Length: 360
Image (cartoon, rainbow, N blue to C red; front, side, top):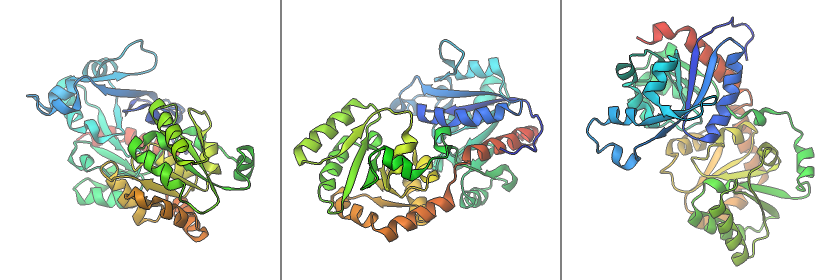
C-alpha cells in the first residue's frame, strides 16, 4: 500500500455476503487501519427469502428493513438501519450488487449520509451495478471503467484497482518446492474446486476425468461440504477414477500454486486468487451464474469455458497442451496480481478523502 498518504481517519464498513469474501476483505481492512481508518467487515444476510421479497409491497424499502448485519466484537447480529444509525459510517464499500437497490434507500430511511462505493470482488460485471445508486466504483480493469463511463458515471469516481485477494495468496512461495511437498513433482496436476460445482455436474466431471489420456492427477477440493465429498467418493468408486480429495485447509494457496490448471465454476469465489497466482483456469458449467465473468475472462484469454460437460475430457487434454497452458498463464499474469488488496485499500482511501464531494 502506498506510504505517501497521510492519516485519513473516518469509519468504513465493508459489506460482504459470504465468509470467503469476509476473509478477503479483512486484509483490506487491516491496510486501511494503518491510515487511522476505523474498519468493520460487515456480513449481510436477509430475513426475507429472495423468492418473496419482490412480491411484498414496499419492495426495496421492505428488503432494506429486512437486512441483518453481523460484525466482530458484537455478540449478535442487528438490523442494518439500526446499526448504521448507531455507528454512522462515512463510507460503505459494497462488494456485491445483490442489495444495491435496497441500499439506495438507506440514507432516506436512516438519516445517515454515507458514501456508497461499489467494489468489484472479481471480474463479474453484474448488470445490477449499473442500475444502482452507488456513488463511486472500484473496478479491476480499465474496460470496466469505460463501460461505467458510458452509463453516465463520472470518470473521476471510477478507480481501477484489484481485485482484492485473501492475504495467504500473497505469500511468496516456491512452486517447485510446493509441488514436491504435495507429492506432485513427477506428474501434471489439475485442481478441481468441487465445492461450488453442482453435484450432478460434478458426477459427470468425475466420469469425464477417466477419459483423459494424458498423465494427470486430479485433486478435488470439497472444502468440508459433506454432500460434495459423498458425491466424489461414490462417483470415483463407480467410474474407477484414482484421484485425491481434501476438505478445509488453511493453505489452499499451496494447492492452487502447485496445480498445472484449476477447474472451477464461473461464480467461484476464488477466481481472483487463482488468477493472481497465474494459474490456467477452466470454468465449467452453465453461464447463469457468472456469465459476465465468463465473457470477460475468455475474451482476454485468461480462462477457457466448457458448458457441455460431455466434452470435458477432450477439453482437459487440450487445456494441458503446453502452448495452451502458457497462453493462459501469460494472460492471467497480465490481468491479475498479488497486490490487489493493497490497490483496493489505496482506492478506498481516495474515495474516503473525496466523500463529501462524491456524495452529491
